Amino acid sequence: MSSPTVILGAGIIGVSTAYYLSQYQDPTTIHLVEPSPELFSSASGYAGGFLARDWFGPALSALGALSFDEHRRLAEEHGGREKWGYSAATCVSYAASAAARDVSQARGDDWLRDGTSRADAAPVVLDSLDGKTPTWLRRLEGDHIELISDEGTTAQVDPLLLCRFLLQECVGRGVTLHHPAKPVAVRTDGKGELVGVCIADTNTQSSSAERELPCARLVIAAGSWTGQVFQTLFPSSELQIPIKSLAGHSLLVRSPRWHAAGLEEESSKGCHAVFTTHNEGFCPEMFSRLGGHIYFAGLNSSALPLPDAAGGKAVPYAEDLVQLRQAAREILGSGSAEEAEDDLEVVREGLCFRPVTSWGAPIVSRIRDRDLGAGVATRPGAGGGVFVAAGHGPWGIAMSLGTGMVLAEMVQGRELSADVSGLAFDGEKMRALYAN
Image 1 (cartoon, rainbow, N blue to C red):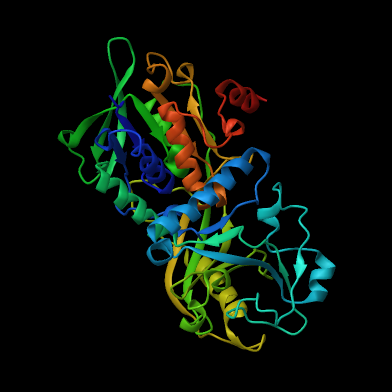
Image 2 (image 1 turned 180 degrees about the vertical axis):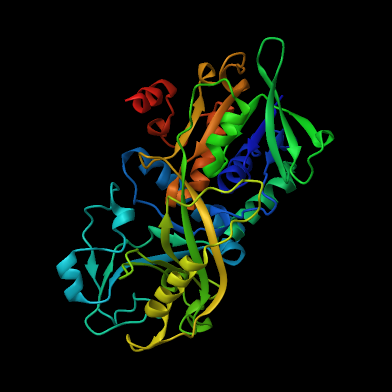
């Protein structure tokens, strides 16, 4: 008999985990709990959707490769190109002038390359007519563009559409979605073992709206809110889940230079990821998507306050949107550098909060019983457990399917498809680290 499993957080990590769990246990024993009034209203729906296979350091390399291959397999088997815009992508770094590039040695993708396997990769300088440069990028005399991806190792998706597909598959199999609802407490039996999670409807303050879900296995995949959820459920625990948030503004735009003719080409030639720098002190990143949209972002901040998970979609800051719009006009607009014509249609504005750790790698781990606090234990082995999967930073979409697959295997006690031992969470080591 399948152990009842509750997943807290129905973002892309949560729905990916439910998707793979439901392949090996009775789906009706799996529950997804999401407090936000709008599904996928943070990073899962408002991220760039850029995928890479080999941009990761040792602790993440196996998971990165597994996840990338799984993205491709899923797209091939389920029509991902049509359903969620899956496409191979060409990735480039761009500088407005070769002179500026030579002086500063700055690269638009430096923040992604730092500490990864791509840090020492040799770029390839492209000629403007070689067919690998994006048609929608405004080129300037003396600019500089470098190819920074190998063929077949980067791709693009629309993360919102992918999330919707995964959730639809889960619900279709029999997984139950509780939305909007938030966890308020765990329940234990006479031996102190976890047997349930109490959730409350966030649309009402009435105590009668609370209900208990049977639960021997608990997965916390609540993104930037993961630490808050853990503290709510295990108030006597001394453990702090050290996940913070990195806020990021974004625009989704339509350009007349990214047109239907270009979308009819093979996917390997259609989409591009462009990383650059800007004189306002941030590093714009742009991802063209099948369907005619270009995602424009890169204006990030760790100082913006994290909103209440049940409070609804975050409202973008007007001054940041002004800055993004100006940069988009200069980089994507038509006309001269001095007078770029604003012919871009802004389709959507967004603000999302990416979960990050101070050491730059996510947590994908079972939490030891002694870290749950007094009076709480779980069934041994695959019969129970409390698990955390969060902190993927800018790689949440890229790592989502591999994380969901490996976490499902971990929860169910099966052999892992990738080595994630470097992502294990040791409460004693973390307490010692923060004590020092």
